[in-house]
Amino acid sequence: MECFQKSIDYIEEHLQDKITVDDLADIAGFSPYHFYRLFAAYVGLPVMEYVRRRRLAHAAAELARRKRVIDIAMEYGFETHAGFSKAFRKVYDCSPEQYRKHSSGQIPGKVDLTLYKKLQLSGGIILEPKIISKSAFSIIGYALETTYESKRKDREIPAFWNHFDITGLEAKLYEMVQPKEHGEYFVCFPVDMDTGRFTYVAAVKGDELPTEEEGLFEGIVPEATYAVFTTPPADYADGEFVKTVAGTWKYIFEDWFPRSGYEYAAGKVEFEFYDERCHEETGAVMEIYIPVIRRA
Image (cartoon, rainbow, N blue to C red; front, top):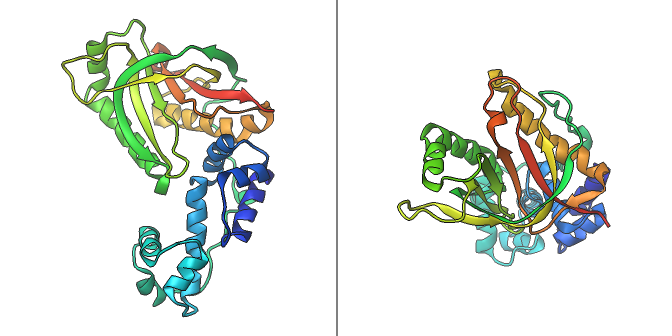
C-alpha cells in the first residue's frame, strides 16, 4: 500500500508533466501490467483515468481564478479547447464556462490509501492458491463490452449476470454447444490500459460455434500459469456466497499478491469457474484463476 501511495503522491506532484503507466509502475516497484491491475483494485479507477480526473480537479479549481479556459487546458496537458471541454463535461456534467460560475477554487483531496479499511471477508479464511499450468482452450458464450471507467463494470456485470440467469441463457448455451464437461467460465479478456475497456464473457468450453444462433462470442483462453483460489464455503442465504466471491477478489489483490512473489501475467486472461460445487444452497464454492508469472 505504501508503494502505491508513492505513485499517487507522484501523480499529484507532476500533473502538468507527462505521466505514463511505465513511470508510475517503476515508482511503485511493479511491472506495468501488474501495477495497472493493482492500482484499479486499490483506488477503484484505472490509473490513467485517475490521472485525468486529478488534472481536471486542479483545472476546475483554476477556473475560479479567472484564467482563460484554453490556458488551463494547455497547462494540464489538453491540446485543444474542445478536447478539454469534452473531458470536463464527461466528469462534471457541464461546460468549464458553466462550472466557473460556481467554482470554489478548492481542490478535492487525492486518494489516501492509509484511510482505506480492508474489506472483511465473508465465508472464512482463504487457503493459499494452487499454482498450475493450463493449456489454451476454446470457449463459446455471450459477451459484454464494458469498462472500468466511471465504475461501469460494477453496474453492468451484475446486470449481465442477472440477464444470463433469468432468461435461461445458461441452459440454452449447454443445449446448443453440448460441452464435454460441465462448468461455466466467466472470463475477462485483457484490459485496454488507455481506455479501461475489456470484454467480459459468460461461456462454456466449445470448439464449434452453433450455426443456428447469432450473437455468440467465440474465443480462446490462452495457455498460462495460474494461481487458482477456491473460495471459502458459503451459503446463498443473505447473499453470503456473492460476498465471499467479492471478498476473495479483494484478498487476492490486496493481501496475497504483495507477499506472493508473483505478479499478474500481461496478455493473459483471468476467469471465474463455476461447476457443480457452486449449486449447493449451503457450502457453495467456486474458483478464481489469476494468470501469474514469478516476480523478477
